[in-house]
Length: 175
Image (tube, rainbow, N blue to C red; front, side, top):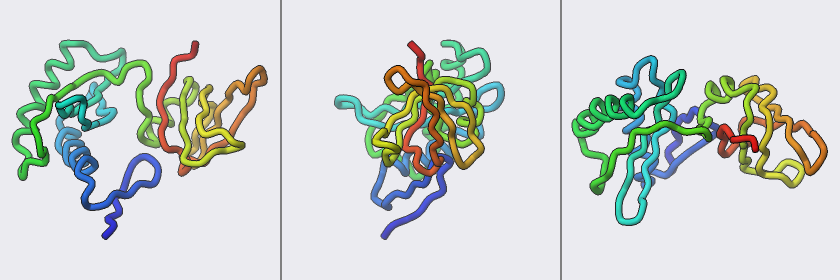
C-alpha cells in the first residue's frame, strides 16, 4: 500500500515502511512550533553514522546562528523529543542542533524564492540537455520554474528548470 504525503519540496511519496521518513515528519511537526523568530527551522535529518544514529536539526537566523543559540535550542528541543508518544526512535540517537552552513539546503518553494540572486546548486530527477546538476546564479523563481545562469565551459548560458524536476537544491559557494 502506498501512502501519499504532502511535501514542501517537489513531489514526494513514501511507503508506510519507511521509518526514517516517518521519524523526520514526526520530529519536524514536534519542533517546528518551538523554533520561533528570530530562528528558522531549515531542515531535519536522521541518519546512521558509524554505529550511531544522529538526529540533525538545522536552524538559522538573520546574521547567522551562534554556539549559544544552538545550546539554547538544544535545551528546548531535547526534552520535547522525550515527550513524543509513542517514541518514534527505534534506537538511541545523538541530537545535533546546528547551523546549515554556507551550503544551506533549499527545501521549500519559500526558501528558493528567498535565494533568488544567490549562487545555487540544483540536482534534477531527469537531465535537461544531458545535464543533471546545474550550479550558477538563481535569476528567478516563480513557484513553477527556476531560471539559472551558469557557465558551460567558457560560455555563459541560462536554463529554465521546472520546479517539479528539482530533486535537491542548496546554496553553493562560488570559487
